[in-house]
Length: 232
Image (cartoon, rainbow, N blue to C red; front, side):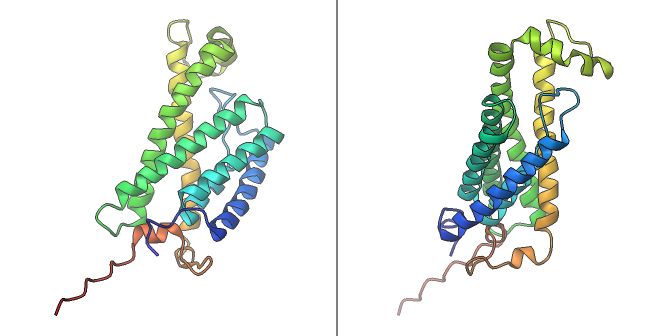
């Protein structure tokens, strides 16, 4: 089975989505309990639950990862914080990340076989770019039209002042959005690093799920095309 038909939803991938969705919710709840907030913009929080989404992407493919993202969103709507704004922003971050990861696999797999290092590099780069772009726009509307710039500036001015960055009415929006992008890139780099440690375990690429190898194994080494028959 080629990579074109892989990464979609079937019985095995739906079961995998369910497992990784449950893991994502558990890890997300743990992250909230530990209070893993971004120091400079405290309403942003690091989420270990995304490790499960990344693993779902590489093991089962883009569609199961999207399903797991929506399931985590549902869990955050039921048990999360800052409902509904927080879960909606998380969903936007997850969807944009999965789209970026998928774009990264397309670039990495050009020309056939690729290495895990090249695959991880391109997926991290494209995932970061897509996520940072989408979340910068989302946070612009959040800061300007929902929280209000003055209120947001007042909330984050002390953490920025502690590191020598003064916020004013003229630079506050740009500084907040810039560090929001830094947070999103850092968040993805963190969870990609953790997921890569799992995926680099020698036995993982050789796993058999419903008789087939993980999706990223097929991306790295696609099945050889059947040679055309010689005409007599």
